[in-house]
Length: 362
Image (cartoon, rainbow, N blue to C red):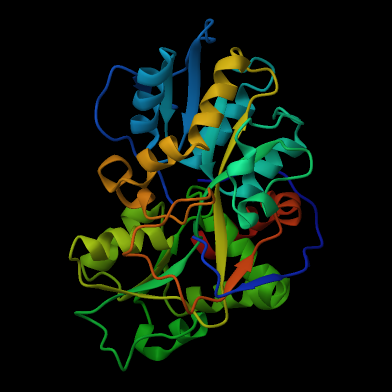
């Protein structure tokens, strides 16, 4: 789920969040409804008045489109796809945008679109005061996008049928051990929204050279790369690999379903991932777009998002809106959170993805 431009020289400062509560998904469409749904394989016509065009990679986007349409009477045309495909479509439409709102995981990717001048800036939702202090801290100075949820960009999930508790990894580096040779997998950061912040975060935390060496060593140890959370999780459950590194909400969802999975939050740190939402600078229906963003940030909208019946694994996120609690299935304590600098990550995004594709994916 990810994308775009950047420069060289990637050594942003770390922000260690400690054991605070933070922590949302790779997007698939849920139940059918009256709101229309398409994917990026087809092109949508410019939106007419009071018709919202939503480009999204969130699992609960269909339920949110339905709820918003029912509440406001505004028709929603949903384009649901991976973040990578969504962003490619947005960039292709740069001179003639067909979308009003974009919504996916990855503040750094959204920051990249902001750097390209695609996003509406300096607009404040009427319910911005609903944010927690952590949510407030994630809002960029130009107010071009807003956080709607928090998860971990990646945690370690291992198959309990293949790995005993005594063999379980405790940190990222444990996946380099001989017992995990040819038995580790992760997502492709050029396709999976949560995975670019994970890769960028590791380069930030370890330094570029050591971070690249970490992924190179994983490849040398036989690591496999799959497109998105679902593919990588499927490989784990099929016994194709013993351990995976994917967004924690997907792991929580699988564990809740009874799959043989245990989740490890590495002691050296896990990288917080925001589900970011933004409005097109030239939105065909800016008024409807603003109403939708405000609905997403309301307690009513968040309750729709938090219901796993609506969002599947994406619903296992940590809210950034006051008065809400995450699903109790989520681990809340003992997690060493690290914030990825979205500005620096956005500047280096193309370079990091190109390096990963050339040296790890291929």
